[in-house]
Image (cartoon, rainbow, N blue to C red; front, side, top):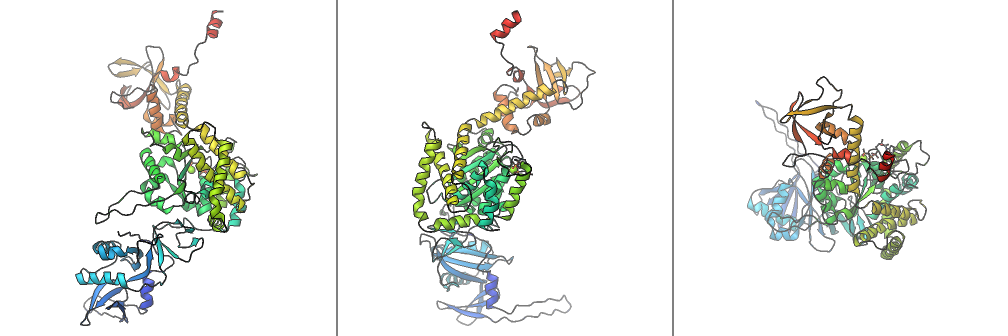
Length: 633
Ligand SMILES: Nc1ncnc2c1ncn2[C@@H]1O[C@H](COP(=O)(O)OP(=O)(O)OP(=O)(O)O)[C@@H](O)[C@H]1O
Ligand SMILES: [Mg+2]
């Protein structure tokens, strides 16, 4: 089936370049408006080529076929066959062709041989879709297919064509067609354009002296680097993709930590994407970051449903089956990666907030790791003599902006040297056994064991990098940082949603305790649904709502919607509301809606939140027997 990808050509030069080489004299056409029209044309020398008995004529930007009578018939805009190519498995042979589209953008496509002979309409359609101008004449179309099928390629070496970076056997391919590992083959990446994600600045040594040095003594930063490095080990160890979500308050250093992780593979500014950009094209991004690190910042910019589906797709490792133009199934995309994410809320709570239970196993795929290391410096523990943690965060970002991309290349270089690749499996078994002994409780469930295995890969990556001389860290530093993170994940597990709910309740209680007398006017019900002020002359500055004494002699609070946002600052509002309803702290409309309608003094009917008295009464200290005795005395 036709597998087609397009991208701007980098190393091979554009079809324009090829065409210009063939036709050095440009066509100059100048039109002067009437009454006198002068057309000046410089005739380009045409080049004739024989393609298996048929004579083709190339002129600037165009391809013609010569008929038996010597007439030139237009076939298509100029197209060059660059190389014969096949996939890594030595199958799916085809051609790489290159041309300029109508915007003068260079396009390069892989066209499979089987499609040329058995699915020619789809080939022509795809070529036309990506901008090749093709004659509609039946014979010319036929001539184009003959040309693509049999023209001698520009490159004599057959290429391996792939739409994903990463491992192909023992070589690791980058987007710019360079690779690490030894192979005599030529690889051509035909996947989506990547921008400058995997650029290099500085050297592995300068990264070690700057970024890696600042990571020392900082658990989260060490783990970020190790997760990043471990991304290239997953396929080799047949391990599944992993996700790590750093959550916590704003300005803790979460994004800064992502910069550190990103700097291992490329330009951090380019590497860090948002959840929103990923949910819009999860499959495309996953393919782009295959065998590498995918970074998604700002979970809250997504929504629970999209975030859940994106994560499912990412960790599933496979794209959706698609139909081709002729109804046949295209090959399904496949990838493996490590993913780092950040947001103010835990991932599990965010997903639950959408009212849906996370899909089976989702919570152990995206592991919630609190970003606050509780050392007084947010995400950091050792600020290396910086003035304060803010200054330290800035120092890290600067180090990452000046030094990136080289570490992963050096890591891969060392990994593919000597016997390391052969030893990798046994190294992993060793680290995993140690990790389980050191950190995993004896009665741990299968899921916990699975997470421990993933984290053992992360620990192994750190140990290897340190052994290769890439980090300058103490021997056990990376391993222990991963171990501590596993322990923190384990102790937090299953309670993160709970914590978020408790926080919402506590924040609401504090709000009423602090503002109950100053920002809520006392009202009572007059008739029907109409509320009036208890004291008609009372006024209030910065009114938050109203309070109402109920038959239990407790106050219920009526809160304006924008004030609820103020009350729940820093929390996910939908999740907080859900919690209030579940615990009976909010009255709802008969259809379950959280906003109820009340006729309020001087406002007419308004949608508001109505808190029951149990929000505060639930927090009251129970009266103990001792209290009673004290009173009696
Ligand atoms: N631990 C910290 N202590 C004090 N300031 C910090 C800390 N970490 C980062 N900052 C500062 O906060 C700002 C934002 O940093 P960063 O983007 O890393 O935070 P964040 O945790 O991702 O915040 P947000 O949740 O708002 O995205 C920067 O100016 C940075 O210097
Ligand atoms: Mg951030």
